[in-house]
Amino acid sequence: MVATDEQTRRERFGRRLMDATNGAFDVATAYLGIRLGLYRSLADNGPATAAELAARTGTNERLVREWLEQQAASEILQSTRQTDGWRFRLPADHAAVLLDPDALDGFGGTILAQIASLAAVPRLVEAFRTGTGIPFSDYGADMIEGQAASTRPVYRTELPTWLAAIPDPGGRLSGGSARILDIGCGLGWSSIGIARSLTGAHVDGVDLDRASIEVARSLATERGFGDRVTFEVRDATSLAGAGYDLATMFEMLHDLAHPVEVLRAARQALAPGGLVLVADEITGERFNGPADETDRRHYGWSVIHCLPASMTEPDSAGTGTVMRSSTVRAYAEAAGFSSIEILPVDSVAFRLYLLRP
Figure (tube, rainbow, N blue to C red):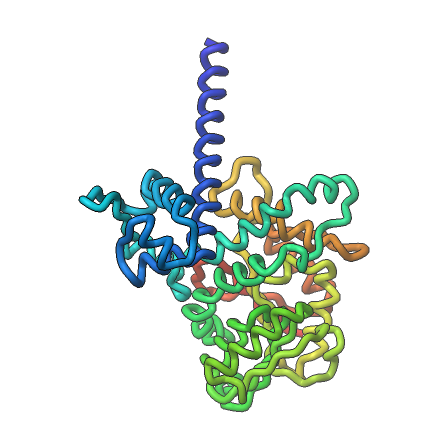
C-alpha cells in the first residue's frame, strides 16, 4: 500500500510539473503574440493564414506558422481548414484578456512582467548565494510596462471607491484644491486616476525610475491632465514639510528596501491633518504550509522579482511580496503613525491601509 501511495503521489507531482511546463510555453508564446503584434492583427484584421499574418506583421512565415499551430493546439486560437490552407482566428473573449488595457481580468501586463522576471532567473543563482539581489532596472522595459499594464485597470476601476472610503468630513479631498503626493508612481496611471477621481486636485507623482517618469509625463499630457498632474524623478525623503493633504503608496511598499524610512518621509510630507493611503497585495495573515492560489502566486513573484529587487541596497528590510497586514502595521508604527486602519473596501487585488500621523 505504501509503495502504491508513493507512486500515486509521484505521478500526481509529475503531472503538475507537466502542466506547469505547458503553462510556461503558453506564457512565452503569448509574449511573442503580444510583442510581434500577432494577436493585435488577428483581433483587428480578422482570421488569417500563416502567409497572410506574416505579411501583415512583417514576420517570418515559417516561424509564424509554427506559432499559429502551437496556439491552436493549445486552444488559444481557433483553426479551420479551408481550400487555401489552415486559417486561424482569435476569439473575442481571448482578445479581451490578452489585449484590452482596461480589462480587470486582462493578462497582457502579467505576461510581460513574468517574462522579464523569468529572464533574470539565471542571475538569481548568484543572488541567492551572495544576497546582493538584482536591481529593478535590470529587469528591463518589459517589467516596467508589464507592472503598469497589470495595475492600470485596477486603478481606473477601483480608485474612485478607494478615495471615497477615506473619511473626509471637512471636504478636504473633495473640495477642489487638494494636494496629493503619489509615491512610487511608475508610469503614472495611479496619479492620473487620482486626478480623474478628485476634480480640481493637483497630484505630484514621484519615482526613482527616470524612464518611467518620462513615460508618465507623456501620458498625463495625452490624457488631458498635464495641468493638474506633474511627475518628477525624486526621492520621497526630500519632501518633508511639503504640505500634502494625502500621500499614496500603491503596490510598492513591499518592494522597498527601507519601507519605514519611506513611510516616515510620507508622513513628514503631509500638511497637518493629512493622511497616507497604502494599497498592497491581499495576503494571508501567516504562513501555514500549503497556501491558496493567491498566496502561491505572490510567493512566485516574490522569489523571482520583488524580494531580489529590494535586496540591492544595504540593510534591506527584505519584505517580499507576501507582506502580512501585521508587517504593514509594524512598519507604520515604527515610522511614527498613531493609527493604522484597514479600509472596508472590496478590491480584486489590494488591501487598503489608511495611516494617520
